[in-house]
Amino acid sequence: MNEVLTWVLGAVVLAAVFGKVLLKTFLMGSAKKTMVGLLKEADIIIGRDITVNDDKMWFDWLKDGELAIGESYMANQWETKDVELDIVLTKLMSMPSDKKRAMFKSWNARFVALSARIFNYQSVERSGKVGAFHYDIGNDFYSLWLDSHLQYSCAYWKGAKNLEEAQQNKLKLICDKLKLEPGHRVLEIGCGWGGLACYMAKNYKVHVTGITISHEQLKGAAERAKKMGVSDLTSFEYQDYRSADCNGTKQYDRVVSIAMLEAVGYKNIDEYFMVIRKCMKTGGLAVVHSIAASRSTKTAHQRWILKYIFPNGFLPTIKQIAQFCEKKMIVEDVHNLGPDYDDTLMAWNEGFQKHYAAGNVQNMSADATGELKLAHKEMFKKMWEFYLMYCAAGFRARTIQLYQVVLSKHRGGRYDAPR
Image (tube, rainbow, N blue to C red; front, top):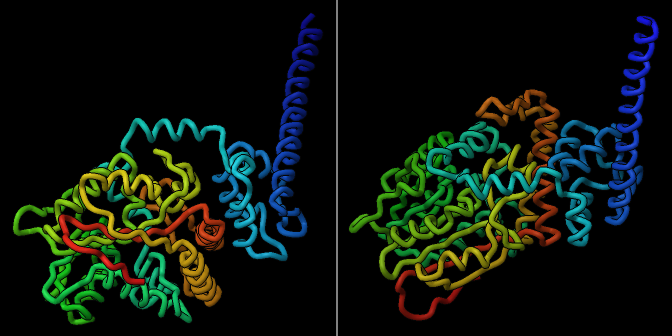
């Protein structure tokens, strides 16, 4: 009897294991068929455009969408073949909306969206996370492949021959839009490494106060001001924008915020523009420069970007920007520079790849929380190139935009926008 029972139990276990293997094989095969079919519709052919090194990735793609596409690239489960990564990703971004959703969606995306609706992931208490996670990996790293002004935002390529000229164009364009005059007091919300602040102080003789939530950027901004001889015209503080003291005589003639709104979050956009209004004198001008989505939502869905690059990021649409400016300030001008960001990102990647090949990019961790350890140099490289090319593809396919919005507060007369 015991022998029979043992045999039966063994058969049940064997059947369960065999059934599990069959189920897994079926699911993996089904996932591959679905994903390969979607890739064909995007004119991406296995063997011609990409090489698959591990078929296990297909099930992850079906389950986790965009997150798995990026992670499997980092893990070298797939790679581009005779075409560049940006071209492959642009084809994916250019798919019809229903097909693209099928490719990029994930099973648990709705739970991520629900969580973002309930919790404020961009609260004051959490505001330093992006600074620590992304910017504080080291000023030396960014200095390798950005321009001499360390502009980590979209350049303006009109008439420019290279990245340096394009970023110089961008700095001048912003200053022209602000209509700066000597002696103006300027607040820069999200001052980066101080490139714009020092440029304004040096060339327009204005006084600039810059705030940031990155310790490395704060250090770099102060060093830049000293090097350029404008320490007397600039001051930099580690401060969340919501803590800006702008009452009474502390108001500013101009306010500028470059590549900062993306970190604000939907729940805080209203307060962000309230701060700009509060900090600006009557008759003042502000320039807000931000990446923007093309479709309005209240939560972010780019799970790979959120996990590896910008935790808690959110891209508003131009409609949402205008909505939250309503009754606060006048929208004087809207300028879409989206295609210029494609060129900017391609130039950044070229610089990054050059320095990586030369051995200048050391092993680095993109982690400040202990959650993500990318000690492997090749994986670090793949993460950065996927990030830069993924974003370039979005701008090239026009699924995301870059807007410069000029705002005014009780300013009389017509505003003539420079281009």
